Image (tube, rainbow, N blue to C red; front, side):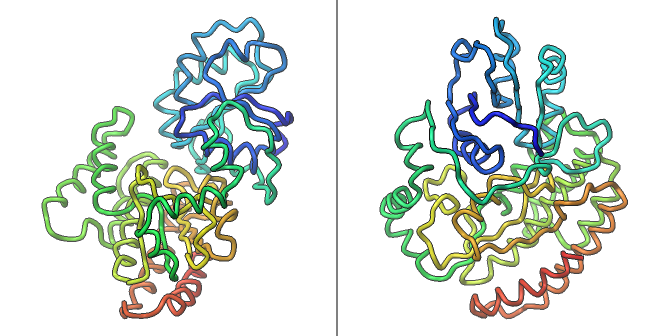
Length: 362
């Protein structure tokens, strides 16, 4: 998509999003120069292109610009729920600024969707971002010199990091029982989820009192039977899929699941572990393939990434397509569960999972 024409941007975002904005600016938006700041006075000048994080939408609307920015782009990192939570403010921003563009990972066929999908962009294989201002030296080194950061992170987390010098299959992200519990709790407490979504979540929450599996394979079709919104069904299905897959993989001696985002051990942002294979399960917030994880895996784990596309990124799913996809996903798990020997080595398993993965290509 030829939407972002300037090669220089000013970025207003929280500290914990800086690395993601660097990745997107470099590999998706093709920026050669970026400046991070949180003072709108410094960008109140003519012909300025801004990437505005959703967390700063209030300050942005309250600031009285003397010079209207030439372009403003706002990324909905958490998909459609970000839009629903901030809908009034985002609509106001669109009215106030002609060149205010919303971008999100959601590629679902949602009625009256008021933002563009990131899947419309191409991911570049080459880095062109050379001029970075407004961040501290450590963050700059982490991005520009990943080998230096990788060695530092390896040494800092010894002896734990020694475990990743051997062949491992790793998934970094949410998906275990504790993660599911927190996600269900969020659904129940959010005023932006529908009543039917809360009913589903309440049923699931009752299962945490039992010493059984939270989900079984038939839970996939049960989601479809609930009259919740399409994006809610997609989110619920992803919770189930990740749980089912990781609950199976945890039995394999070579598999490791890193779920705590506050953990200082960086496994996605390092090029140090040459025998590690990484799982890519897509985004829980939308089926587009343009996301930070995909960029990182192509950057640091080329040839060692296992992409399981439970929802194809090039399809705009509606109710019917989503239902048909559930059948294919169930078949994938039926075939996966036939691998009952958990003492197999990683090379044999990788060959098998690549073969089974062809089911998801249908």
